[in-house]
Length: 114
Image (cartoon, rainbow, N blue to C red; front, side, top):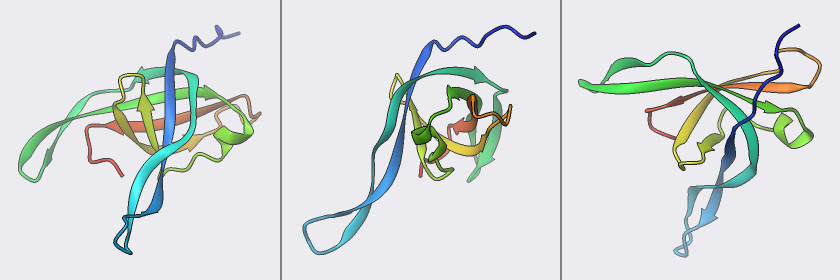
């Protein structure tokens, strides 16, 4: 039997919405969508990538949250934000136990958001 998960961090989720800019155009703006909720953030492995001939640190993480109806509607196009207001791009969402107990979200910090 595995040890229970420790949810010690708070995260929130943002979703891009089309907002009128006042000049008759619309622009995509990140707006709060879900959270904050308790989560477990576990770094996977840091690596460096060459982006546009610049060395850039990329930090992938696994974020585990409790399953609920609102959490089930999280999309890979949403953005995860930690308590320091650092944005993470969501790359994958999994239901690891397939019993709707937890969601495991793979995300990356260090790349352009959105």
